[in-house]
Length: 423
Ligand SMILES: Cc1ncc(COP(=O)(O)O)c(C=O)c1O
Image (cartoon, rainbow, N blue to C red; front, side, top):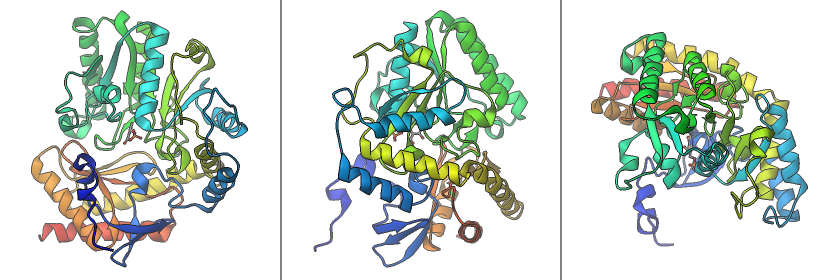
């Protein structure tokens, strides 16, 4: 076959990304390149593969379900696998959260959560936070503020106001000072710009993902909880990236011990099949009256079967706890790299949601990170950046990664940083 380029066939809005590596197949932590090389994959499907590629339990569930029922729109039909999934999920959700609207993606889950909040409060404004990423559809994009370039060309965007998220390294403050400043600015916003009675919801990623793997402080989330309660607004957690064990608890809400009213879920929920969910309490969900939201494919039976299998393995193998234990050791090992590589300015994040930061927004730090990533690729490790200037990398192996793969990933990163310094 003549050599084909994705650039001739796919919109450059997405196809021009990094590293665009042609691959043939993948298994566990390994991807097989068209170049004949085998790579260690620590992108984990952009945090959508908590069990790695093609986990046998997920593949078996998909095969079995595909033979029975591939698609039947919810509402016209009702099928057990989706109700079973809702029951399974209700068992692991924080607080009273136990009712779901299933969609197909993270952005859809965020949009659904915001529609729910607007509908039940009768208010329109949503307060999100700078550095947050919530998706690319127009509603979710209005709330996304990780990079201005994502918003460029799409103004005006409706209904969103952005507050400050505490980022101690960049703020050059202690976590406590950064938290106090962020909450203080939020109070100013509520005093001068948005009346609390107009706020439908506060929307936050408990650990900012795309924005740089920046964990919120517990006090910041407690401050949002208190302000939401006082304003009669809902607190929405975007757990699209933090959910399903990544932070060392099933959800970041449990890791922090601060419970929201609504959650947006996607990514790891179905090990790579398109599935997302708005999750809330029955009390709130029951106010979302018939026909006020809908979907054709959401809650697809095959994706639901994959999600049930994923959740079963996460629970049977106690992978959230493993992520906590392995994450602590991995953070220590990466901090040991920091002691030898002065370019690393911070290693941060709970569980196996670890960010390795090389700078604080200066463009040259983004360049250094890119050099590290290129060297990793040459040495056989695929890993992806994050942060507003692309100055951090996300260290997110699957939660069931074995210790020798993990050690290999850290060792490659060590060599890649040393090589980048000599570039
Ligand atoms: C926290 C968060 N929310 C929402 C999204 C959007 O998800 P999707 O790309 O599935 O629409 C992402 C994707 O990276 C995300 O990380």
